[in-house]
Length: 64
Image (cartoon, rainbow, N blue to C red; front, side, top):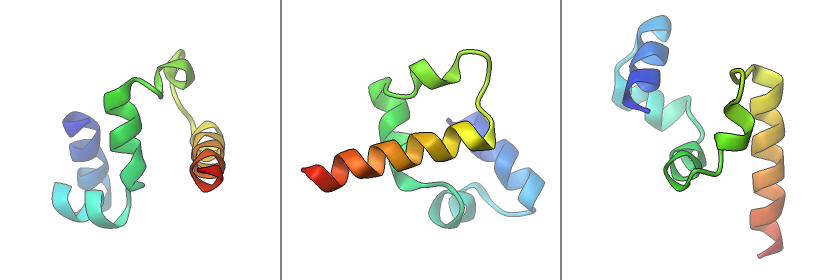
Protein backbone atom coordinates (compact mmCIF):
# COMPACT_ATOMS: atom_id res chain seq x y z
CA UNK A 1 0.00 0.00 0.00
CA UNK A 2 2.91 2.35 0.64
CA UNK A 3 4.06 2.05 -2.97
CA UNK A 4 0.55 2.72 -4.29
CA UNK A 5 0.10 5.67 -1.94
CA UNK A 6 3.45 7.11 -3.02
CA UNK A 7 2.44 6.76 -6.68
CA UNK A 8 -0.85 8.55 -6.06
CA UNK A 9 0.93 11.27 -4.08
CA UNK A 10 3.44 11.85 -6.85
CA UNK A 11 0.74 12.07 -9.52
CA UNK A 12 -1.25 14.55 -7.42
CA UNK A 13 1.79 16.55 -6.35
CA UNK A 14 1.19 15.87 -2.66
CA UNK A 15 2.80 13.98 0.18
CA UNK A 16 1.83 10.45 1.20
CA UNK A 17 0.20 11.79 4.37
CA UNK A 18 -1.96 14.30 2.45
CA UNK A 19 -3.09 11.63 -0.02
CA UNK A 20 -3.89 9.17 2.74
CA UNK A 21 -5.88 11.75 4.70
CA UNK A 22 -7.76 13.49 1.88
CA UNK A 23 -7.81 11.33 -1.26
CA UNK A 24 -7.78 7.66 -0.28
CA UNK A 25 -10.81 6.15 1.41
CA UNK A 26 -9.70 5.18 4.93
CA UNK A 27 -11.27 1.74 4.79
CA UNK A 28 -9.17 0.77 1.77
CA UNK A 29 -6.21 0.24 4.09
CA UNK A 30 -8.29 -1.93 6.42
CA UNK A 31 -9.65 -3.98 3.54
CA UNK A 32 -6.22 -4.39 1.99
CA UNK A 33 -4.70 -5.59 5.25
CA UNK A 34 -7.53 -8.05 5.86
CA UNK A 35 -7.31 -9.45 2.32
CA UNK A 36 -10.83 -8.31 1.47
CA UNK A 37 -9.68 -6.66 -1.77
CA UNK A 38 -7.97 -9.70 -3.25
CA UNK A 39 -11.01 -10.89 -5.17
CA UNK A 40 -11.23 -7.49 -6.87
CA UNK A 41 -7.57 -7.09 -7.79
CA UNK A 42 -7.18 -9.98 -10.23
CA UNK A 43 -6.28 -8.31 -13.51
CA UNK A 44 -6.04 -4.85 -11.92
CA UNK A 45 -8.50 -2.43 -10.39
CA UNK A 46 -10.09 0.38 -12.34
CA UNK A 47 -12.17 3.27 -11.08
CA UNK A 48 -15.52 1.57 -11.70
CA UNK A 49 -14.43 -1.53 -9.79
CA UNK A 50 -13.15 0.58 -6.92
CA UNK A 51 -16.46 2.45 -6.67
CA UNK A 52 -18.29 -0.88 -6.63
CA UNK A 53 -16.07 -2.09 -3.79
CA UNK A 54 -16.62 1.06 -1.76
CA UNK A 55 -20.39 0.98 -2.23
CA UNK A 56 -20.64 -2.68 -1.25
CA UNK A 57 -18.45 -2.28 1.81
CA UNK A 58 -20.31 0.83 2.96
CA UNK A 59 -23.67 -0.96 2.68
CA UNK A 60 -22.30 -3.84 4.71
CA UNK A 61 -21.02 -1.42 7.38
CA UNK A 62 -24.38 0.36 7.55
CA UNK A 63 -26.19 -2.90 8.27
CA UNK A 64 -24.12 -3.54 11.37
